[in-house]
Amino acid sequence: MDKRDVVIIGAGAAGMMCGIVAAKRGRSVLLVDHAHKIGEKIRISGGGRCNFTNLGTQAAHFLCSNRHFVKSALGRYPPQDFVDMVESHGIGWVEKAQGQLFCDGKASLIVDMLKAELAAGGAEIWSGTSVDAVEEGFVVQTSRGAVQADSLVVASGGKSIPKIGASGLGYDIARQFGLSVLDTRAGLVPLTFGAQDLVDFREMAGVAVPVSVRCGAGRFADDLLFTHRGLSGPAILQISSFWREGMALEIDLLPAGGLSSAVAAARAKAGGQAVQTMLARLFPKKLARFLAGRFGFSGTISDLSKADIAALETLLRHWQVQPTGTEGYRTAEVTLGGVDTNALDAKTMQARNVPGLFFIGEVVDVTGWLGGYNFQWAWASGAAAGQVA
Image (cartoon, rainbow, N blue to C red):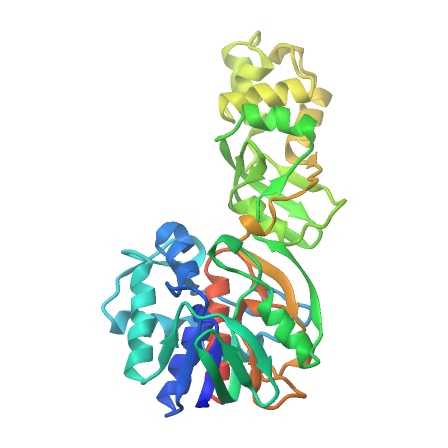
């Protein structure tokens, strides 16, 4: 039987980082991945440019049943460590809003870099290889035969984007070895709405506006995008991780204010101007028409009393919408929930009751905000396991 020091199930971001770190320690490493082309989630991320980290990464940027769990791994492998690797390979990068770092070229450069680092350490990759079973003694039955490992690292990801092969394999392995798995759901995903809302939203499909949106403990200021299926855009993707069935979103359509000055300017210029025309100074025309109709302001500016203006501002800044669901794993960027962090050592990512078994990356109940945080978790958790596996 083939034997390795470390077998890693999954050659995505976390799995490759784990393999690199373990191989540099002199461990014999094998990565097994079902895909013929590894690192596909890296390639398609960030619009093909890969938002590979965020310089401002902190524990507060992650959802986890244990909010302290991420601190150890993130503290020992900060964003600059990955930036150093990127720069050592001559890969250019650009910084966008809020510390988000993207490749200056194609995202495939990051995949090529990781593969080069694995090769330099002598790690082997079995791509296009399915894992059929994991047996006692960490014997992994694959479509290329059986391989036994001293350490088994599960980096198989979550359920998001099934078209690239995402599955619940990692959760099944966790349960097999007695680890608890928290309920999973789609995260960083567009929200869907009922028939009446969709009639209005479809009229505005393609319209994007800056908003501040709140739901539960989440609050984000970014762009909202109307679509034929509901609402999307960075603000909605962010808040989707906090949304649960039955909850409403509160949307501030004027996060920077400006209604009072717009009304004053409209009155000074033409008091007989329609409210909709005034709103079109603040919003795209389609949205202005919708807002005027939805909130019942069909008269002119001169018709508005102080109470009317206050009511209009309240409606615009506290717009309540009720999603009926999400687009699901099909378009979700991440999977919420997963392997219970209470079953793992925060420093090593090793299962507390199963020596030699590790879980890293998205398969764990750790989900970052949009903006490079999930990749940073992949690098950090992968490095943590690679240092001891």
